[in-house]
Length: 135
Image 1: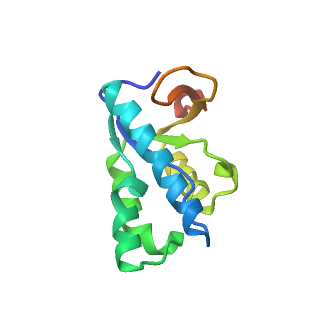
Image 2: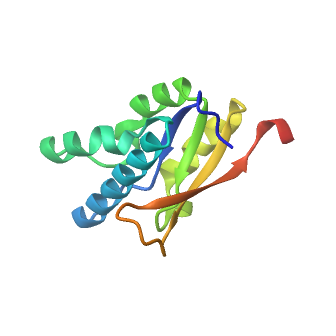
């Protein structure tokens, strides 16, 4: 389980040529941040932080645009948490973030949406993906 003292970097797929897809992914990240906050975790999401800035100023949503920002926050975090939205496992950005985290021996978890809940807000299950202590 993720420690309540962890500093979580929430990764999720984002880039798409379609604005509606980016908006849906942004809203998914918002929901996940709310859930993490509600469960007393400290979280940073580059998507939540930068989506509105990118949309307002027409910034390129490609991975390279955000690398410097993302790497600084990956250095800050103690745990990478990957929101498993559709196509997360095909995301170039997530792949690079996971490689960077493995390289410095930090934990990786998956955050899986529970789709059949009766609650007003989304609910999730945390799943351990990589533990450097197991290597």
